[in-house]
Length: 239
Image 1 (cartoon, rainbow, N blue to C red):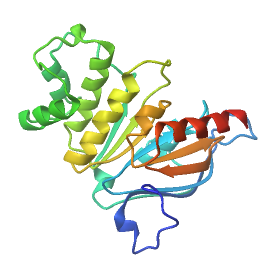
Image 2 (cartoon, rainbow, N blue to C red):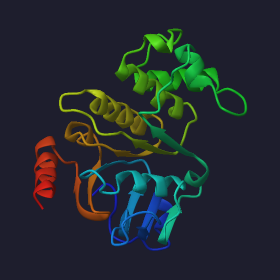
Image 3 (cartoon, one colour):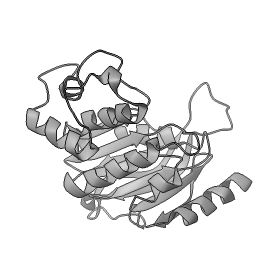
């Protein structure tokens, strides 16, 4: 598969943007018998796009948080490539702008430090198919707002991009649009990407798809079709 291909040797870790080895995560206030992640091993090769899928509470968000270094595993090891460790972009696509700034101002602004460069902002907006940049963010549609949030992360030129797309209703285009953007970013910006999504069409854009259930890695596919992904999700729902 395009993501994890067995347990890499120490000499092979340099080929991976991020790896998790036997990672478990237990939250103190959770059910004592339940792990958010349980003995999970996974790796994503540099320059690949990996989609993560699974039922609600399967561990998708916790997996991305461990990959980002936001959450520390209860056990196991998370490793990053030498460059990726200092260049991680995290996107939570329900964290949308509410200010009256322009698209350009929103994409270029940083909470601390200098603004992102005009060149980086232009490149990110181009990949996100986000025009015109002088438009007020309050005029954007829901899909355009998510594009702006993703463009903001891409403007930092991350080497590892982690996208957590919350559940969407059937027929919504949000996830599949983001899947297309992430696919373009991987191809044109030399980024490695992991995207948690519930949309089989969005996941079909990825090089590989991994499926979680109850915090465990239960299946994986490379270059999977929409029908193959849908069949696997139905199987997980029936278990």
